[in-house]
Image (tube, rainbow, N blue to C red):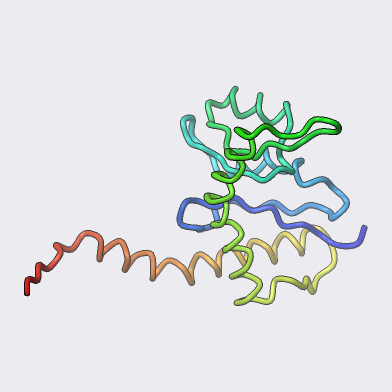
Length: 158
């Protein structure tokens, strides 16, 4: 095993709700259900994910939990995606930028591209600390933006 993967679930604002760390040789999709359990996603919510999470098992799990499926469709061998599936994937991509922004910001602010620890427990602790630091750095701005949205708008006329 050469490395670890950080699997992260974020809300609409990009704040980290749950983190799971796995060995790099494990497939991405293995951590999805654990992330949903950690974050306590309520029925009726929509979860977006990339093609790595596309499987019948995950579709059924989301349906059983009452969670709306926002996982991109993946083409299978000798069967291309339909135009409708391609359009759906493009719409999901527009919603998924939030998690990609989170990873990019963690890399930029905290140097998360390189892990300086060995062992799954230490790697997971590092990923948790990065998530906490990221949320703490983002919260003041989100709080100010929420206050500004509640202020009455000034009217100007010329």
